[in-house]
Image (cartoon, rainbow, N blue to C red):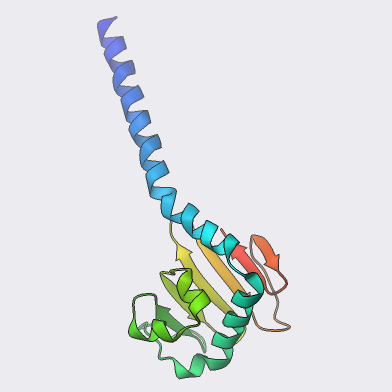
Length: 136
């Protein structure tokens, strides 16, 4: 009986540690999502479209070529050239192609802004406004 009680105590302790760890790990994702949801969505969409039209002025910071797109690290000097509303999201990195901007705000859980060019096919988890989606 004593061994059973000790096993229950150990299992309960491990479960509590796992739950607290998951909660702590997901804090950045929840905060990133809050920054996205509280942003000025029309201004954020305009900034994404600006990045799409000016993407050739940025250099690709990733070694792997990415189908006519660029990768901008959130800590790089050229990131400071991005529109302020995008900088305010404090993204990890940004991917820009001719049809879409993906702003990776948090991982894990994933919180990504999808900003689409006018007339581009759109997708995401939650539609913020036409042309701007949240991916989770």
